[in-house]
Image (tube, rainbow, N blue to C red; front, side, top):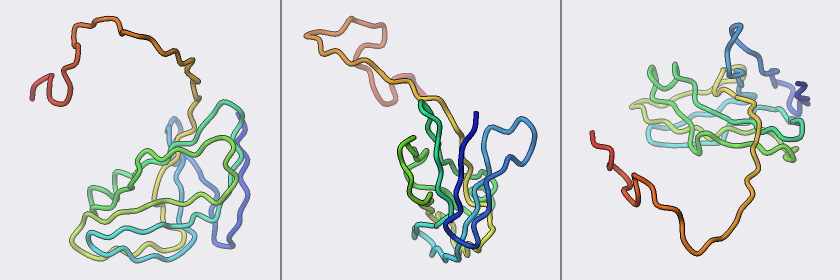
Length: 142
């Protein structure tokens, strides 16, 4: 499967798989952004993308940034639909205790390309009963 990328910033870095068998492509920042403790910001990647029909791109946090610095992503996983042609941006939040400087070239997120299943929706008067029923949050115990 081919995914097309276009650089729209001089400091953009093409996504890449760090290791054979990895599910996620590393996504890098194309600009400097400082995120204050408890703060959030949008980071440009300098990339635009064209996905094949029937696919989405999911933007996910990097575990190393999360465990070492408290840096993660809002709206996770973020979905990029196949028809979107704008710049890919990443919404970063700092749960750490110190300011965090994102610099051009820093790997800030990962992107997983996944097939999309389109549901056929049908409105009904009543749903079939199930073992779980209406038991919601916390219903399976601790």
